[in-house]
Length: 231
Image (cartoon, rainbow, N blue to C red; front, top):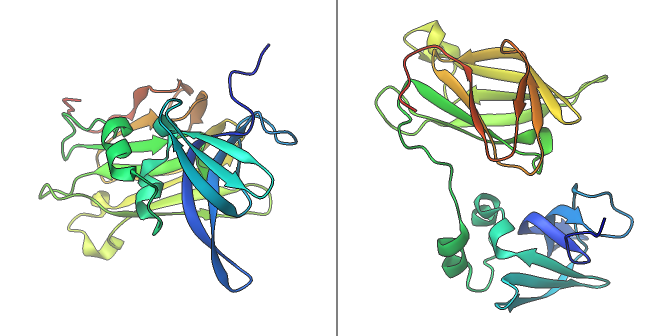
């Protein structure tokens, strides 16, 4: 079957600086496709970026490193990560305004939270979306724990357990990571309904919240119901 991607295509990519030999250099991070020596969808980064050009006809950035020209389409830019980068791509704001598609939070109330996952993220985690009881945006910290036999990912709310009026309000989500799947072993959502949305390109299998969940790309599922939801 013919590969649908151009030679050296990057998807879910972003440009970021990196310290190398005491200097800041630019690398492109993302998923490699049709790249000799790499398996399809492999996460990684390029060598040092030498130049960046816009190809409006192909709707992509053409990013040159020492040995390769990478094709980085506008619509597959990882905009959330690119926003955090100190380096701004040419015409970035204009391109973002046209191609960025944020997570749809219409109807999401203080009773709900959305765990956003994707295969292009390490440990699948992209973000956690929820509101505090007063309607303000909820904050969180997410980080991996590298184990001897298996890796896990931990997500906590922005407050310690003793800072909550009720212990049940505490957010503590933890899961084991496997190839193409993950399994919760702690699922304290602060008494909120847990929705999981797959923003990636491949199906993920989810365990630990009842029956097996087969979550296809672009889909959202109610994984844990605690309260009424209008989503």
